[in-house]
Length: 207
Image (spheres, rainbow, N blue to C red):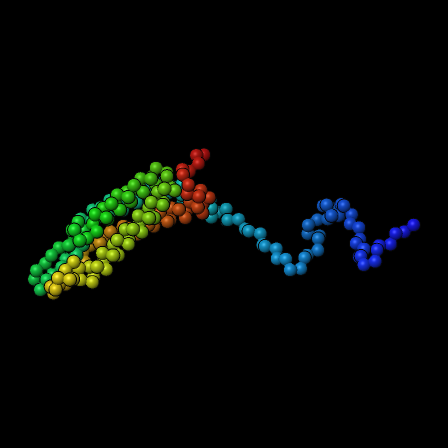
């Protein structure tokens, strides 16, 4: 006796368990319309990663001393001549970073932080060293830019009514260059160790 399906229903052909559970290979299954299959992600080039690891191992000692030297130069340049102001063509005033109306004390503090960042990098604390070097470098550049704009707009005597001519000295330019060096050290070290697979966290694993 053969049972017929009730009226209004559609007969579904039976599917073999072996074909549904894994008898058919994935590439043998029919493609489904409307579904985009993402392309496989290619891993990083092992040759480039190995080259970055060798560069990090051979030059890993360099960023720390560079940041320390840049921080020391920032401290020294904070007391240098930042500008020379001439009033009426014959009276000269020397503006230094340690003057009350300049930001020399702030740049001294930032130079100390740059030295600390370099010591952290030299000790292998790359995560903290890179973060501190990046933030310190940005702050040094910002401070130097603010003082340069102020001096080029007339200097400290702009509101005094005197006829003055301001010449920017080497101190601020040295501070700006050293701030860029500290910022570059933090960014480059972080990028190199992330690309080489270390991630820039903590010390390198000992082999």
